[in-house]
Amino acid sequence: MFNYGYIIVPSILIGIIARVSMLRIDYRQYPSYPQGAFSHFTLGIVAASLGSVALPALIEKEFSAVTFLALAAQQFREVRNMERQSLDNIEQTELVPRGTAYIEDIAKAFEARNYMTMLTSLIVSILIFIFKEYLVDRTYSVIIGCFIGIFVIILFNKIISRQLIRDIADVYPAKISFDGPLLKVGGTVIMNIGLQSSREIYLEKGIAVEIIPKDENANATLSNIGQRQAIQHNASIQLGIRKDTDEPDFTPLARRNPENGNIVMAIVCMEPDVEMLVESVKRTLVLESSKRKPLSSYAGKKAAD
Amino acid sequence: MLGKKLQTKEVLNLDVGLREAILAIITTDESKVMGGSVPVFLARDEEEKEKISLMLAKVTSGIIHDLRNGCYVIVRH
Image 1 (cartoon, helix red, strand yellow):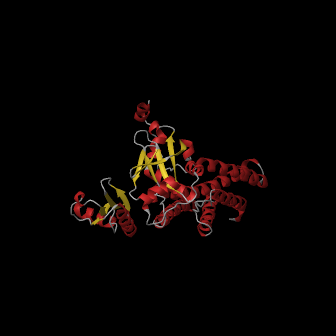
Image 2 (image 1 turned 135 degrees about the vertical axis):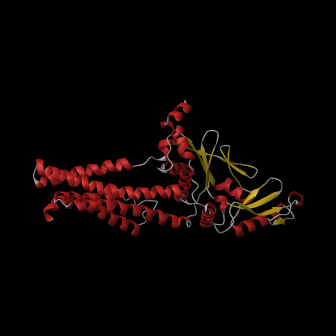
Image 3 (image 1 turned 180 degrees about the horizontal axis):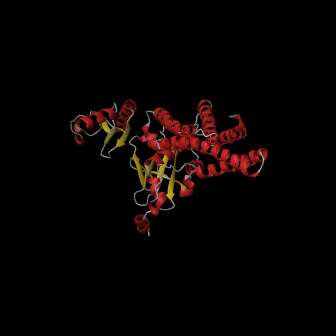
């Protein structure tokens, strides 16, 4: 088995690099650091090992070993379930929930990243083997394989990178006004706030944005409730929400203007900086599960003209 | 059979507590409300109305909506 060390070791290493490059520990704190991140790092090693031993097993005519790849797929689907469950469980502890669409997106990303790790390792092992057999000697084939492996990592990272709201819509600051008890942003009614003191807080500290979709595709995507929930969640964790559990008045709500599909959102933040609110909305991910493309359909395209 | 299935599903989805329901009505004008299953609180003036609604909203974790006819309702969403 160790005859294939020159294939297995470099491809495991490149696989681990691939997983680490896709393990983002940022403001979302998901995967949570240090324990969540560590378990995903370990799973990444498992994925990389599975990817890198597949080819040597085939060379040794151990065909049954390849069924382990199927086992791996099962294992990573389990990862997706695990992530979804754990996020669902903590959902009730969030002041502004992520929403099920966002959770589904995160869970999907974890599963896909494990597959990418496995594929990277597999590709590197195949490359090293081909170079070694047909072209150059062992050392050079390992070096070339690793270089192409790094290129594959960059490529994969590019493929799985998702769109942001700023790619599909323009975001502008907007003004909060009241029509009697009705909270309005840019003419769209958001909600009915009965309490005078809450209205004063909104007028004094509230900030608002208007999201204007660039085309029909963006319009349909932004109409999705899960996408709007993700925007609310992102804005409230980045700027801090001025609210407690018994103050539903200050729950940020992104409402849609049914006339033109514009989304308006008012929020009372710890840091009432409207420029940064615009920035946080612009940097929100476009959820894969919310994405719609009516313009790609015959009827949608004709109707849009 | 189908009925039974539906029932089990309903039981599984049962969320304990009241949702999307009017929990209380606070008003200064008795003539605007009628009896029913929802408790009605009478307030002497606007100030007292605000005060009672705030207290009730905190207790029920509901939100106060203004019906613009002198009545406030507390709703949990």
